[in-house]
Image (cartoon, rainbow, N blue to C red):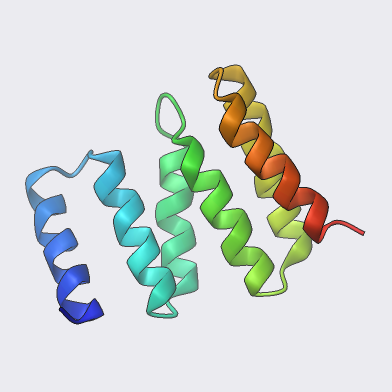
Length: 106
């Protein structure tokens, strides 16, 4: 299955379930793979504004921005994500983001 077909399938599913955070996250990941970074980050930002914020979106955005050498932005996303993960009691995600933040800081 081509990446474009997978993206089209996700977009079609989002037509049926526009508020599904996993589908939104999956679309953001496909957009990242396609090199549509700004659009991907817009979807991730939307997920962080949901209630409750979708914690994996912070980590994905941080990783994407780090790959793009946008380190200050990546650090900001990760810092926000760590705080949100801790607030939600997701210590595993907080730990992963803390570890990744340490690798890109300095």
